[in-house]
Amino acid sequence: MTQASPHGAALVRNLLLFKELEDFLGELRGAAPILLKGAALLATGSADPRRRVMQDIDLLVRPEELDGLMAALRKQGFEKLSGNASQFRKNGLDIDVHAEIWYLDERERALFHLRAREAVIGEQTAKVPAPDDHLIYILAHAAIQHGELEPKWAEDVAVFLERHGAEIDFAGVWARLSQWGMTPAITWFLKRSSVKLPGAPPGEFFYDLLLDRLPLSNKGHFLQLLFLRSWRFRLKHLKKYLFPDSSFLIRRYDLRSDAQVLLWRLLRPLLLLWNLVHSAFPIPSHGAR
Image (cartoon, rainbow, N blue to C red; front, top):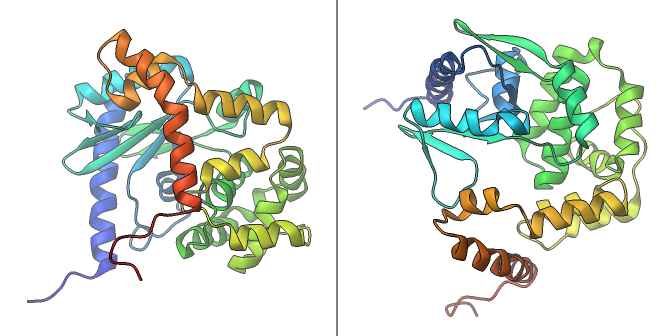
């Protein structure tokens, strides 16, 4: 029996995901969410659909649009995944919805939406980030949200630069990365991935060493706190992470009563602290020697 090529499997999955996306966009009655990550790259021709595998489709909406977007997903037959606040699945195809970008304040997020460009998805319309915003997003996602050197993300950046480099204000990109405190992590990712970004500073030895050796297996939230722009912004981010609002707790933990919400409001900080400690100092299995 002839095995299907991995490139063919990626193309088929991407076509299925985009067909579901097109059908879903039709239910929004003209509203146009912003595509993020792989979906945005594929929609703008900035990735090869035979090679760039999408695990899911990420959509960004304004906070006041979030409930309507989730209702439209349910109407389209998607079900929210248990234990996840924002991911929906239908026939093995996932859509993940977002109302915020962790490094932007409210004014900057509004500008992100304002600058977004239209993208045609079949017979429907969505949006994609403006090139400068998009480059910053994919860099921050790879270098900080995950803190990993996956070849897929290095290729995303390289292909994006090849496609959109002439449109990008690199001095402006580096100015924003510096303002937001993300420069050390981005330069580390670029150096270790051998990706050339015009105007890149040389990097900082301390942060390079830290990111190379950070022992956490799930380091994204720690790195977000480390590389946010100010202590005030970090504390605001930490408070929201440890003590989110009730609507998030209800979606995240599938809660059904006020008592359950209160219980999880108390348990969540302890659970997150335990996960952090366990990530830094994993308990060996009984079979380990």
